[in-house]
Image (cartoon, rainbow, N blue to C red; front, side, top):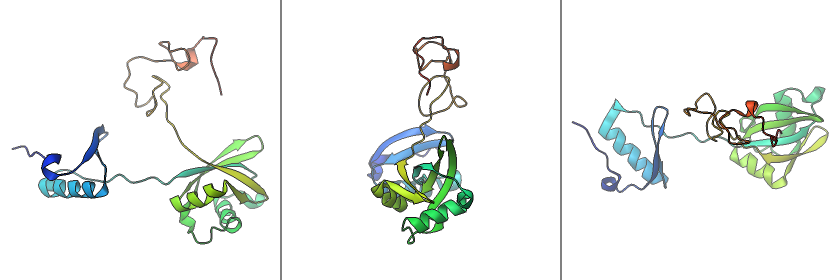
Length: 186
């Protein structure tokens, strides 16, 4: 016999649902609604289904035009410099993680994963000191776009579209194959 869970009977407010890779994501407007919903599902279905809460990601920031020198070439040295030179002594070393270094003409840009508190403190100043420089800081947003169908939110490996769509001219081909005169290359 199939069991039915009704948000109306539970008096739980659900904003939306959507299919995900291994199940269904349920988006609630309040944490109390989510907790109530989780408890009912776990008691009613037990070990038959896994009920997990999505883990929040830490924010990422971009530190621009960092000069990498001999005393600033490892991730630990960069994090140490950030802590010492920017009054971040109240935070832990686990609050900052170097994700990648993007090589630019005059040095490199750092992508850092930081705690929300560190982000707030750094973004208020709009810059940080690293080594011998004062470097601008911005939020780093990673936006994914499919190279096959040009839709945002997935890559060409997960694309279910049957045909290609050029982002430049909207033709039925990939951007690489576009012969349009108005191609914009960054």
